[in-house]
Length: 143
Image (cartoon, rainbow, N blue to C red; front, side):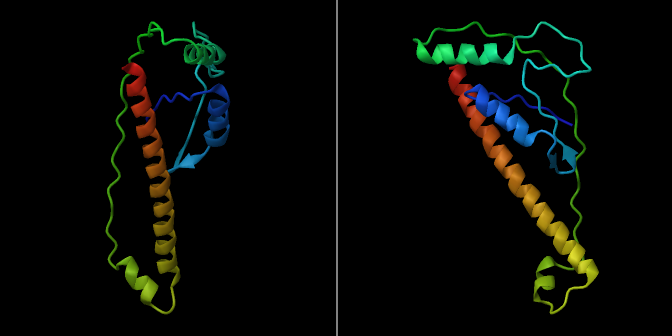
């Protein structure tokens, strides 16, 4: 399992993203998405800034002249390694199934798995492009 930190331009969009994506299953993993400043029920409360305060700071900077804000030092967390999933080559190419007149139950399962994998690939591509865009914005903010 991995984790990511994402920042939206306003709180409404961030809350909508949490509502839309939290609990969604992606590649067999259930996504657990939380707003910064909203501690999980089973964790002890620490000294965290409320999410509304973070967005107020962002909006405040946007309206006034750009004044450097002291940055918080990010908390270093250990990385978790994810085992790689190896691809298994099927003995019969998928293209042959489309050409054959009737599909057996075995070939239907392979076709179904292929379409599921294509959907997952598309979703991961969208997520990657969103992360790349966010990292680009983060670089702009850092400069």
